[in-house]
Image (cartoon, rainbow, N blue to C red; front, side, top):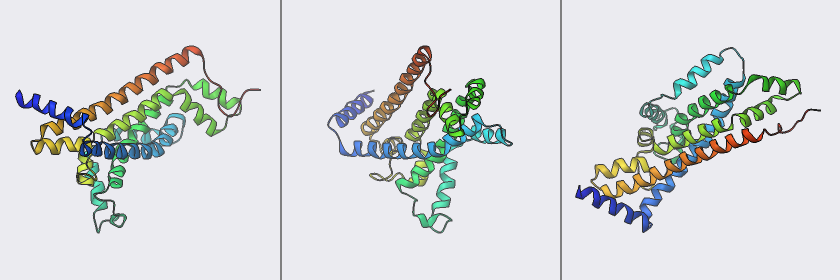
Amino acid sequence: MTFIWDGVKQAFELLFEGNGDVYGVLGVTLHIAIGATFLALLVGLPLGLACGLGRFRGRRVALGLLNAGLGLPPVVVGLIVALFLFRGAPLGGLELIYTVNGVILAQALLAFPIVGAFTATAVAAVPRPLFDQARALGASRPQLAALALREARVGVIGATIAAFGSALSEVGAVVLVGGNIHGRTQTLATAVLAEVSAGEYGTAIAFGVLLLGLVAICGGALTVFQYAGEGRERGGGFPLPGWRAS
C-alpha cells in the first residue's frame, strides 16, 4: 500500500505545482475532444433530426445504423482510419497520420453516432401534435428543426456531453491513429496507460485525477441542464423562434 500512497502524494504535487508536461497533455486532450465533438455535431445533429422528425423511406435503416454505431469498437475504427491515412493509402496525401487532426477525425467518427442516435431519440419523444400545430401555423422546415431542438434540448445537450466524454476517455483509436506521441498526440487516457507501463504511478494518478475531474464536470453540467429543463417545463414554454400565430 505504501507505493499507492506515495503515488497519490506525487500526483497532487505535480498537479499543484503546475507541472508543464501534465497540463500540456490536458491541453491536447481538450483540443481533441472539443474538435471531435464539433465535427460530430455537424454530422450527427442533422442525421438525428432527420431520423427523429422525418417519415421517409429508409428511416428505420438509418436509425438502426446510428444505433449500431453506438457499439463500434474504438480500436477497429482506429485501425480502419489508420489504414486509410498511412502513406500510400487513399488518404495518405492528407498527412493526418500521427497528428492531432487525424486523432480528431477518428474520434469524430466514434462520436457522431452518439449525437445522432441520442438526438433522434430525444426528438422522437416530443409530442407529435406540437409539430402538427406548428405546420398548421405555417412553420418552415428550419423552424420545425429549431422547435425540435428546443423541445428536445436536454436530450441534445446530453448527446453532446456524451460525445465529449467519449472523446475524452478513448484510448484505442488515439494510439493507432495518433501514435500516443508525448507532447503531440498523447491524451490523458493514453498517458495513463503509458505511465503505468513505465512504472510512473504518481504521474499516472495525476493524469487520472484530471481525467476524472473532466468527466465529473461533464456529469455536473448535464445535471444542471436537466434541472433547468424541468424548471422551464414547470414555468411554461417559449415562443417558436421566427414565427408566431396570428
